[in-house]
Length: 231
Image 1 (cartoon, one colour):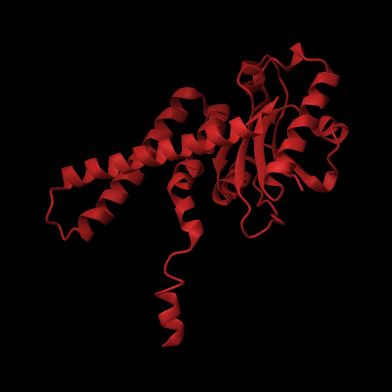
Image 2 (cartoon, rainbow, N blue to C red; image 1 turned 135 degrees about the horizontal axis):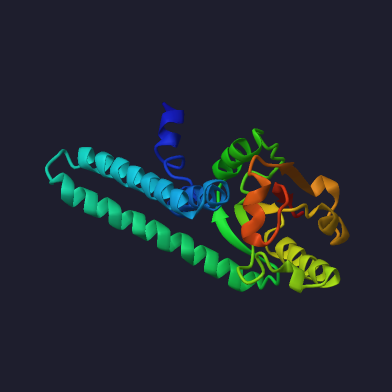
């Protein structure tokens, strides 16, 4: 009975539960970018729109039951849609806040989850990614800044390495136990090593994305999925 009492008092809600609101969006959005790489923009938009519709309907169904079916389902669906919009805005706020504080030169971050990382590893590389991380590690979807995606040739190798070193230093100072993951055409392994990372600090896996899909970035190279541990 004491254990039950503790579960219903101090164990009723843990502080990490508040991550679940933006995490709902942060779990879905990383799939959008990789679905774009796999199938194109239109299929990715339709798939992700369908996923958000399923999530909204599922949330509405739970709320409808909790309200004992006393409110019309249309109204409950509208409320669920508003909650989903609030989740999107909370996710965007986290991204804007972190990227502003980080001041990265090369990368931008998007709040994500362990679930997204593991499922993307399975989808893109047919592998579960080993995760030696701390209990409260936060997961971030890592992207090149939009004006640099497909335009890295405009930067010299030395400039890219210097920007990486700056960004990794900022990440270590701000979020030393967090995990970063992303996908890009072409291997960044040599650049990561030259920027000061050890091989034990990142995992790189070739993906099933066809090389000709990299032409959108003015390249034709294999896509690689990366997981980085900055600590």
